[in-house]
Amino acid sequence: MSESTRTTGGVSRDAPLQGATLAIVQKLWRLCDILRDDGITYQAYVTELTYLLFLKMLAETQREATLPADARWGSLTSRQGEALLTHYRALLLRLGTEGAGTVRTIFTDAQTSLRKPTNLHELVTQIDRLDWYSAKAEGLGDLYEGLLEKNAGEKKSGAGQYFTPRPLIDCMVRLLQPQPGEVVQDPAAGTGGFLVAADRFIKERTDDLFALKTEAEQRFQREEAFRGLELVSDTHRLLLMNLMLHGIGGDLVRGGDAMGPDGEALGAADLILTNPPFGTKKGGGRPARPDFTITADTSNKQLAFLEHVVRALRPGGRAGIVVPDNVLFADGAGRELRRWIMDVADLHTILRLPTGIFYAQAVKTNVLFLRRGPARVSKANTPAVWVYDMRAGQPAYGKMRPLRVEDFTAFETAYGNDPNGAAARDDQGAEGRFRRFSRAEIEARDDNLDIAWLRGSDEAGEDALEEPEDILEAMRLHLARALTEVDALAGAFGEQASLSEAAD
Image (cartoon, rainbow, N blue to C red; front, side, top):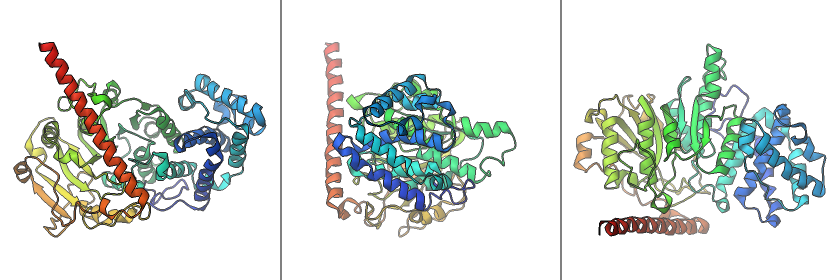
């Protein structure tokens, strides 16, 4: 989440968190030790913290007027024992039913996992003692983002399985260059990383929106520019909190399923940035989208999300989407989808990402960069695809060697400064990382875009894992993925059997 010249006094997210913010994140994370006796998981812990931090941050920013007088931070610090826990439970219920706007959404169906009043009192006390003056100076949004990132980095939480590394988000945003007045969409928003990064990129270049000419333009950026969906309710809660702390209106970033009517209702976008979920839809289900023609009969979620991205783009709109390797070589609907995309859009660049950058170590991924063409469908829309191999010969990324901003420098230089990939580029040949493949060459490969030419391109990562927990995690994911595929296959056979019985 690039913030090299932020005008609001916040920390650059191209660099590690600053002193006070980092110290607070570490202190907040250590508080989870208090809750282990209450049987609270890491994910539930962050959700629990969200409720308390929301109330405290409203108090610190003088925005408590949106809350009832007896449902504010001071109502927690003034109580102890069973009276505190009873009041807290009632407070959550009240804000989830009587709150207004974002407050009500954040607290909808909110329940505490805390059972011991002493644990709640300790949390409230420790949060109240933090250095909030310094945290406000460095940016409360950065503090909360740091907490979400810490949670994703903790394997026991399970939150980081497909957590998008911030340096990758920053890279994609810098290359695609979101502009004021554009609708930016993420149909699988998670905790809001792409949306926050796009907002920050725009604010850096508009003097925190003050350089925009009219109040209407400023209001659009604050309230209408960012749209998205998140299926998981607890994650949506974290998402709304993150957007609020960064000054982004969350009314158009809703809870819902992009593979159903909610996705179609998102409308057209100028820019889509997303890392959709990988795997198959549970139970072998298909997208409930009448506008889908290519992936309507597949349970492969990443293929369906890719169709959504292309259909949701306005003519000339651009997108960056993280996809697993199988999207590039899958037969059937996968091959048909790739051909269709290259006919209706300019799929100009593929970045082959190294393994290990996701906490699910075995996952091999890519970023597709594309621009939606005019209404006319033509092979001329994608004259060629440029492929950058960032996978071959790379170090074993993981907890001991996290992904860094500078790891993308060579790729960004090769990509050029045109967001649509139209800058002058050099084909680096068989020994280089960046190569051009004409549409004719791709057709000769039966439209297989899983193109590798450097030695060791698919050997690094898993085989280079050193930490036992990383190796075990990779093994677990292999088994989980295999079981998912077996379930999907069984579902397909079941459907065929039902059709045969019906025919008989």
